[in-house]
Image (cartoon, rainbow, N blue to C red):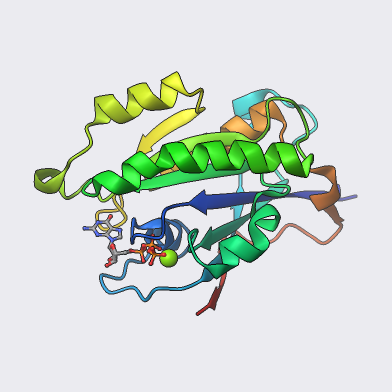
Length: 223
Ligand SMILES: Nc1nc2c(ncn2[C@@H]2O[C@H](COP(=O)(O)OP(=O)(O)OP(=O)(O)O)[C@@H](O)[C@H]2O)c(=O)[nH]1
Ligand SMILES: [Mg+2]
């Protein structure tokens, strides 16, 4: 008899200063393997990707077999706009990971990460929905690394800052060249699994036969 397939639901949110840092492009590349040079500003994007992960090999977690699936629900919002002001706690609530996104060619987008980090920690404390004192995985993600000549924040500086404020990981990406993106999300998922920072209320048990290799892509935009 076939074993039930467990689908773990994991919420990941991106945080930027709403300055075209490339948050949507990062998710769009990861989920749809696509890139658009001329994106439109949106208030909220919601992208979903289902992945197969042989986490036994990664974490040694015997409860998690190769038939299990992870459904990543990824939120990307204009953080300064009305959605943030109105629904701020909803974004952070039950997030397993928070990605602070900055554009390596835009100094302000980097400097504002300190503010958003402080804000995230405050909101999570006020909301009281953290699973543990440690809280969700937090990662700093640099975008547009293909624009090396226009770069104004170095790898070393960003890495050092991330370490100094206890951020769990620092990653460099280019959605245009498709570099660093799978590595970023694979590492973030591994960190989530290692910390076991998954909200039980998000879990479902799916008794259907195993689905085909991951192709599940969907995406919704509010403009
Ligand atoms: N060269 C380069 N351009 C990029 C990259 N990622 C995004 N862009 C461009 O940066 C602009 C903004 O990208 P978005 O993904 O919309 O950024 P965003 O953070 O969602 O923007 P807002 O929500 O409007 O603040 C677009 O013109 C993208 O084509 C990248 O890796 N390299
Ligand atoms: Mg956007």
